[in-house]
Length: 497
Image (cartoon, rainbow, N blue to C red; front, side, top):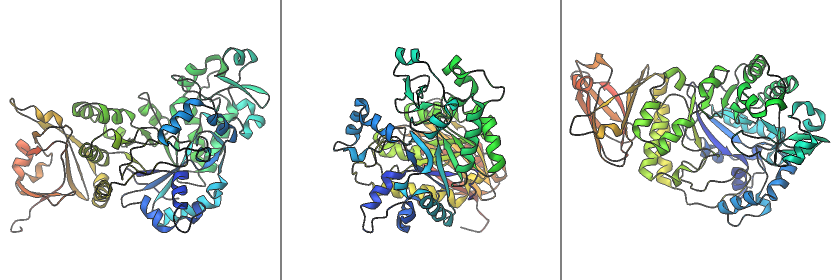
């Protein structure tokens, strides 16, 4: 097993789309076991700690048929891929029939080869787990109907969008309580003891194939949310919550396995307490894309221990492409924010090259888009700089940006620092479309009696300042719109230039 660092950098790859594009190249690799070295190099630039191969499990033929007949889905497919054909529609990777690697991708043997290739690079492998639902043609439907939320003939007659007949029984369709049911999946019962034991077993078996899992919509299985969603259909409320019961059992068999929760509704802290190593930071995503620097700063006042167990991201397969919503300078500023905060960071394949089309996960082909070579070079330099300096192995601290009465532009600046065995580092980002100035006090009072050198990690900038000025009243910062500083901070030895 490849051990992930405390702040892992994760690269999400849509496995079927990626392999299909590789198959169009000379040599035509058939599956995960035949991916050439240069293709692995492309998705593992320096600074990546783990690859999340999204969508490797056996998909449902029944689910695909439902998707093909759904007018809203077909419309979404055409919008993303105007020349879409039925060959391009594989069904949802979250409508899983069985947790075995699909044979079209190379099966379990192909995945084992892929994992070994990543491990040789010191990179871990993450896979999906979908705890809330399964495909209607899952073997569990006929073998273990007690694992599912049951309905009645009257439920089906009254609300056919929420129930279906499968395996000779009426079962509820999977759902999120705030949206209509998903038409292609059936709802697992988080309160059923047998289902909890089976989930523990499946996750432990998945742990033989990878280094960690990303648990889809993890909050839906929490006792209080599940009870509110399903009420009398789920049966009596268990004494122990779902995730503590399941994760404790898995960790007895796979102690090093990493668990990432897709989490919403401000339940990140609760899921951390229930055993997850990392939880999505959707609140920061929303603030970065839609709110001000002051809103982002307020979010970052949370405790460092809590922030170290969050997953920071600007996009993933569920969210729009960031390049379609932010301008080039704004996108780079946001990337510096994400890359230099505590916690895990999640990057989506195509994000580094500026892809703009948000592809439905049902599709195995995407439109051609010209890559932005400059954007890729920027991301590779950013990730490599953060990785090579080891800055995120130290202690993180939010810094205040101080202004003066006739200039309030300091409110647009975000600043923090890292300090540890590998050195001292300071980050300042102008998160606004106008020029901004401020004083930023560095917290290292031991530098007050020396000169300090600030060296840019993303450019060739170099400054020398009085340590006393740097600590009080603070460094004077003057940044253009969406400008960034990412500096190492070192004392200058006497007599050295």
